[in-house]
Amino acid sequence: MLRYIAYRSLVAIFLVWIVVSLVFLLLHLIPGDPAELLLSQGSIAADPKAVAALREQMGLNEPLWQQYLSHLGGVLTGDLGASFRDGASVSGQIAQRLPRTLEVIAAATLLAAVFGIPLGTYAAIRSGGKADAVVSLMSSIALSTPVFVVGSVVILIFAQQLQWLPAGGFVSFADDPIEHLKLLILPAGTVALSLWAVITRMTRASVIEVLERDHVRTARAKGLARNPILRGHVIRNAMIPVLTITGLEMGTLIGGTVLVEFVFNWPGLSGYLVSAVDARDYPEVVGIVITVSVLFVFLNLVIDVVNALLDPRISLVKS
Image (cartoon, rainbow, N blue to C red; front, side):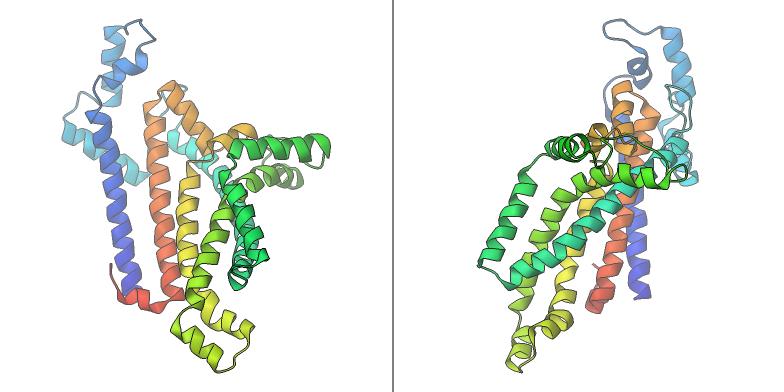
């Protein structure tokens, strides 16, 4: 197991290096001068002196290999540069906003798993019946409903009509824990709906597949009750693809909660990325892209290790 973890960790480090290098290369392959692009406003050309000064500030006058080493060194030390808009540290801004986005994703994943895994298992056990049809219909509706529609509906119902929860905003947990949790419920629930549908459908398909395996049929033939079979033979094996797809969905959500953060005025990382792109703030965009990529790779590493713990046979295979 330790050898497997070490191997997967090396692969993760290699993938991070590839991502960091690709971000650097892609930015330098884009036609045009980044400094001139940042300083120009519409049809008004930028001042050549200002462009030259900004190129010097960005290190664009240095050889490409030296720029790459500086870029790589900054990533390794956690120094992602300073914002062109206000001079603030990009690393500091990301460190401030990232936990807010991760909090929404973690709460949404918990809600989706708590409701999705039991419902998916229940539907699989009664495959082809009314319960299975109802669960499948519910998950299909959840998957096909856009997140901004869900967000608008829950605000209308729970914030405006019932007035149970605030419509949006942000208060830190340290300042007011109760208000913070109230503000978290609606955005987390909105994100959880589509994730719940994915987990439910994957759980159903995985449980049905495991129920058809020979060792489960043998357990049934020996007269074992349904619940011991589910606990001892089905659920553990069925959770491997469920965990994998959940990890991929969580990684996608790290940079994909833009609409949720916008609808609920939640100051997270996704909204920060949109504002950085709109302002053409090169260090901010690069820093956010690298952060999201590193988190995605790390999350997949964790999922690989958890899967290996659930099924030790996985650790015997290095690829």
